[in-house]
Image (tube, rainbow, N blue to C red; front, side, top):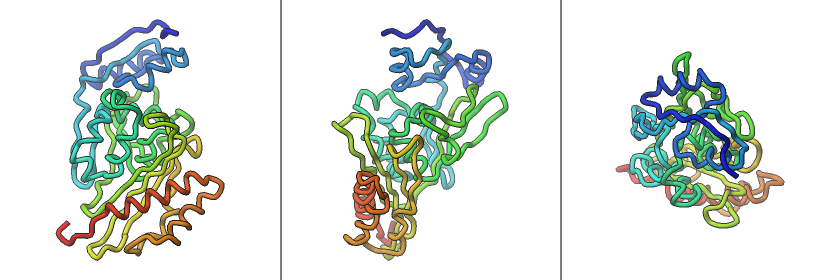
Length: 277
């Protein structure tokens, strides 16, 4: 099939994009197009206007204070390779290579993934695990929306139709953080059936002082599940008994339990406690 007819606007700035969205209730934002274009091709989405936000300077990645700030048009490939992301949000860096295939990661954007809100996607789960937020700009100004309030249902968010997602913000990790995103998919690059992301931080003596986790593919929105790995806090290592307990806490979701145990084991192994860190 082919997409239904639509108009196209190459926005020159964010305000122009917002005005276009406000003026046409059928308008949609497009950047990488890796989620929207397939839906249009199947006529599951029929926007009357595509507002292109690719050239608005929304690709920057930086740390400001205690936050990692990622522009909405930052490509998945940048998340995978940028040393700033690896240092400040190792879970985000570990999840990025799992997104689709290289051709998808070159075009796909963090803003597009978060706004699409696929419950089996990696990046929404990462945002939830790390307690991050997005910044949206609309006719009423700019506002921050926490991850816990952003995802409201299957392919649904609390963003207004006339708002442009401009940035993702994630609390910056310490130098003693370690992370792992583990998922199962039928083939490498396919949509995952289940996934769990874990990020931990150690103290100078190796003691785990923080552990956060979220799962995808377990409901209509990403599931914050830090409580299932909470027993690792105060520990220096992870033994078999602790890992078994983590796996069992997912109850009927056996696959998620196994992935959580694996992700926790890997994250703890990657977390440094060098006093110089």
